[in-house]
Image (cartoon, rainbow, N blue to C red; front, top):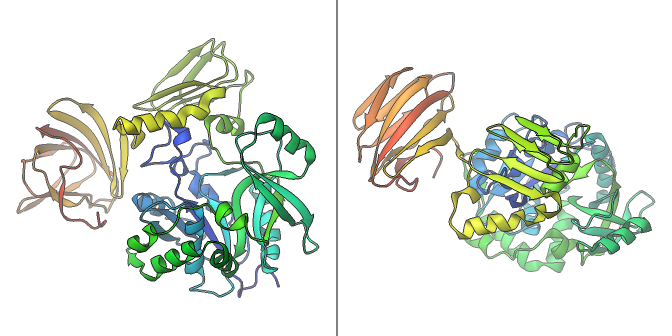
Length: 478
């Protein structure tokens, strides 16, 4: 049966639950790497993940499984997806990949008993998408025969940062091979032996399988996951463009990876070799390997001046970064943080993020520019009793109707038109006009125009935290 048969729709499933802490300070918990153009290709990783599938036949609308805190980021970035409007499934808590794929499988079976899932993490890089599409087509045929297919990336070096798959004999007369075992990240000597053997592949975390076959494997090997996910989907609610899984049911679900819960114990696991320039972009070292380099071996991005420097990754996001005599280092500058590390020690960046969280530092969570469903704001100046922000409101968007107990606000419009609600008043402000919102006054800001609204906000008061917001009405359900 052809992979393009309308009775066998292919459901792309994008897993977007990661926080990308190893790519700090560019990746933050509130705005992780999948929503960034980390490879400087003009498109974010989640956008690239969907776009590389465009020419596959028989595709249904995609599904994205994500943290509910990222729902508007997903919706905004996939607004113009070439695969159609995505169904966005919201996880109330993270429970790893096995439950994420389970809820997607249950959703897919609501539209077709023959649904096939093509599962991809949202934060990987594939330099040769045509090769991936060819491998997916082969995987679909193996999935028709009942296989749970994972892609094994052909290794080009003895990598110690990836898990591996050992491939056995071919099955079904095609290129798919039985999975002998999954192995954890090896030491350097073992990785070299894996590379020399020709039987081991990097574990990509990408899968193709029938939804029904995956759920049956869960029923056999991890019934508690299936039971919790069935209850979470049964109790799900539609919220705007999102599907909110039942929180109480999903929180009961064990947190397990798809490898551990299904692929390791099942007899149906098969692997297909993939050679498509794949990287999981799991660290600054792997990102450097995927980047273009100059004659000195440097990967330079942004406003960078490198003198007598070799084999470095230097990224400037908001200002000039200059290096002199620097060798084999990673330097990443953002508006509020700078990372400097030897290339061989970038694996320790995750520990920096853990320390920031333990210390209650905002740099682990957010950038200085914070994205909201209506636009964004950026902190410019902060002192004991005042702060200054730059606010951008998308055309047609509005903030919640709200009030503050501890601060007053001054707004100055620098671009566009603002519709302001202040107590019982409603009025328009144009460029170079301003208004004052007294402490305790109910107010709202809205952009009725066709261009972005930009304004400068000066807050003054005894407490300036974002939690001093009492929302009276909010179209975004916050």
